[in-house]
Length: 135
Picture (cartoon, one colour):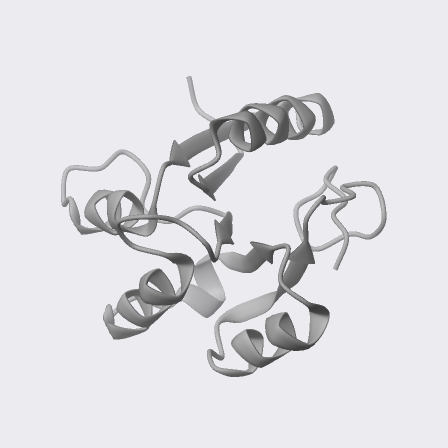
């Protein structure tokens, strides 16, 4: 099946991933959500030349995760030779303070913004038709 929208959901919390997938699928009828437990899994997927998806339309990445946390993922993603700005909207997701999240976002030009947990997906539009997320 071909999907119009692909989302990488990178978070170690299985309950959060499950809930977000239900919310996103309720808002987007034609969505492919690829969940990852940590940043390393997502990077390995992106590094696989036989992957089905070139780049996702959206990446939601948590900061606090084991194995490879969100900060490490962002640093490694920054080293890859991909044009993340044109291909993908990337949001950092965390329950960190708003000040800390703003500082993280300033560190990488490809980050579109941050989302404070719990996420309210009804507040504003970020770029995929039919999906509203708080920014």
